[in-house]
Length: 193
Image 1: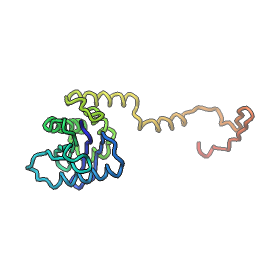
Image 2: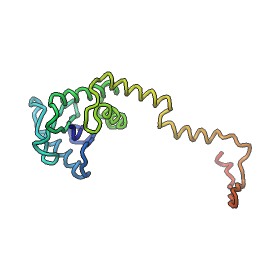
Image 3: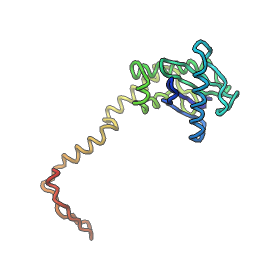
Image 4: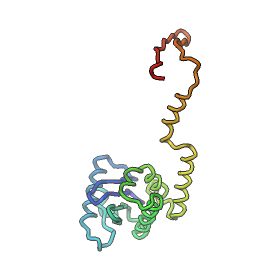
């Protein structure tokens, strides 16, 4: 089972952190730091598997990683997972990001965090691998994008609300509003119209 997925840059700044096992926030930060230091001190021509750090379970867990340009993709897994299978899963995840963002870079992970998490959830959920077929994952992402466009997207909601309020066609602005025993006097708002 996958325990955690970490993506950080060459300077150790986390760009994606997803734990599938509950850890307090302080321990999560220590795990990210320890994992970064374990991975960083390894040479590029050494294999991409190593025993997990002391905080995440020691020798019972493995860190499997790939280094692409400025980003490290690290999967922390237990001993039941295949190292080569996870290495292939990292490749599928990165290629899917690359297709969705057209030459993915670190800034895409920063500014499109919601989409990155959605892509990750199409690949892994609850620490279990859901899908490894990149074409199927991309098809689901494109389906989600079409749905968001048809709904106008969440980002368009405030603008639509303001537009709807501005387009209210009242013959005159009411001065007194009476609701049962409650009387509300409305101030002159002509300067705002």
